[in-house]
Every structure is written in structure tokens, then in C-alpha cells.
Length: 279
Image (tube, rainbow, N blue to C red):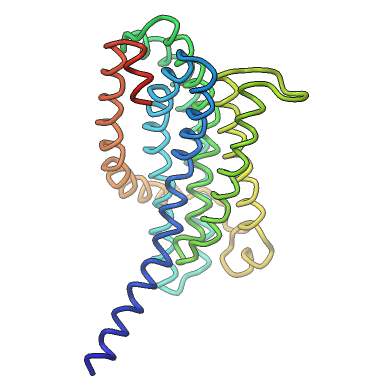
């Protein structure tokens, strides 16, 4: 009897691991891509590697907040699966898509009006600050891809199907490596772009993952079962519920990132070499 109990407990651990591990890979994808940026930039220039982490982590702070809200669609999808209302899944997903467009407007405003005063306030060396602004702006302009991938990924994770999400993110991380090299240092038809190339490579890689997810999600089969295309109407009440529960849930993770962001920005006030060492 005890042996049977232990076996069942072991099976539960396996089920939890099978669901959670791909989610961990998915959540770390952007962080890994920005780390890849820094690896290449460390061989490009001291100023570039010094600017990469403060600008990258600051951009990710905003991306994590809006992406966290978008990923909360998975909770609603899981609820509708449990309630045997699969057609509502399409409605949830589309509210997440509408929220994605809203977040894009916010990111464009941040890139246009917050970049210069933010990094001027931080007080890093002028040559580093210029590169921080470039990298930060590029990441903000492409942040809509990140939020959209979080929303579409929730279609799978909300139903306990996390392997497709993991596979898509692994592809994005692998694609980011040659793109980083080509766009940072210049290769073939690609010009040398330095830290701007690193940002563009990360955005393009995320865009590729989004493109794959669009192909996987918006199928005739999924539309028949979940109303993925037909249930695309705007539902203010459902979007309001998503924000009501998604904002507090996303805020906790964002506050953790905020603490680390402040630490990195403060180190940069000591000096460029010290900032590069933390990267």
C-alpha cells in the first residue's frame, strides 16, 4: 500500500515537472536572449557592454509587467476548460490581443518621451548613456512582440500544453545567436551596428517566435473547437476582469525586477568599468 502511495506521489511530481519546466524555459527566453547580447557586446566595446544590462533590465521591467498581464489569459483559459466552455477561450485570447495593442501604444510613448529623462536621471557616463538610450528604445519599440507571445503562449499553457511554448522559445533563443553576431559585428550583407544590432536581433528573434505561435494557434481546428477566429469581438467586461486579476499578479514579479533594476542603475553611478563588471 505504501509502495502504491509513493508511486502515485512520484507520478504527481513528474506531471508537475512536465508542465512547469517548459514554462520556466519560456519565461527565461527574453532574459537568455539579452544575456546573449551581452556576451557578444563584451567583445565589441566597454561602453556597449556597460550599457546593455541597465538598458535591457529597465526595458524588461516594463515588458514583464505588461507581458505578465497578457499571460494571465492562461488562468481564464484553464477556468473555461474546467467549466466545459471551450468556445470562451477564443474570447479570452482576443481580449489579450487587444490588450497587446494597448500596451504597444504605452511602449511607444515610453520610448519617445521617457528614454532621455530616465537615463539622464540615472547619471551614467555620457558615452554609456547614449548607447543605453539606443538599446532601450529598440527594445521598447519591439516589446509588442514579447507581450503578444505571452498572450498566445497562454493558449497552450492554460490547457496544460507547455511543450509547444518551450519549443518555440528554444527556436527563438537559437536564432538570436547568429543574428547577434551578424548585426553587432557585421557579416555579409549585414552592416556593423553594435548595440543597436543586439537590440534588433533580440526583437527579430522574438518576432520569429510570435510568427510560429500565430501559425500554431490560428488554425481551422482550433477555431471549430475554441472559437479562436470567430470569437474575436471586443468584450469590455472580460478585459476588465483580465486587468483586475492580471495587474496584481504581474505586479509582484515586476517589483522583484524593479529591485534588481535599481541596484544595476546605482552601480553605474560608480563608474563605467564597475558597471561593465556587473554585466
